[in-house]
Each structure stands twice: as structure tokens, then as C-alpha cells.
Image (spheres, rainbow, N blue to C red):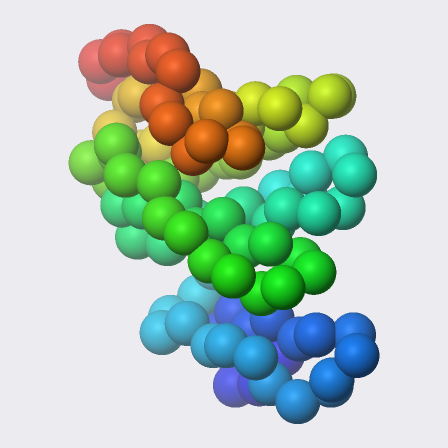
Length: 104
């Protein structure tokens, strides 16, 4: 994992360190097929292709994510943030599908 408190990704075929984020990322989800990893990344969600290491970012929260979950079929990612917003994302297109906005 690298430094304590840092999130890192490793490629199985190459154990060298692939990436390391500043700060800690304790919230993550793995798609049911094991092909996508989702991490909280400040006000963004970082999606990483587990096979290639290619990363993309989902933007829509105004605070860090507090929970992430993939649907059983892996097609949808749900994110809930400290901003009281729950967002649904289409995992393949990385497009926001739905949002539920609450208040404290």
C-alpha cells in the first residue's frame, strides 16, 4: 500500500506501484465482475479499470463520498456524499443517471 494513510493500486502482472493518491481513501467499491474499482477522491469518484489501470473521474458531489456501491449487475454505481446527495452513475458511460438531494 505504500505510505500509511495512502491508497495505492498495484497491477497483478507487475507488482510495482501503479499509482498513489495524496491523503487517504477509505471508501471504495469493487464491481461484481471485479473489473472496476471505485474510490472516493475528494469531491470526485475515481473509477479504475482493474485490468488496465486506466482511471476516470465522476463529478457531482460537493463533499467527499461516504459510501459507494455497485448494483448486483455492475451496471450502476451509487454514491452518497457528505453533502446529503445520493447519485446514480452508469458505470460503462460514466454518466450521471439520477440524483436525490437531501438536507441535514
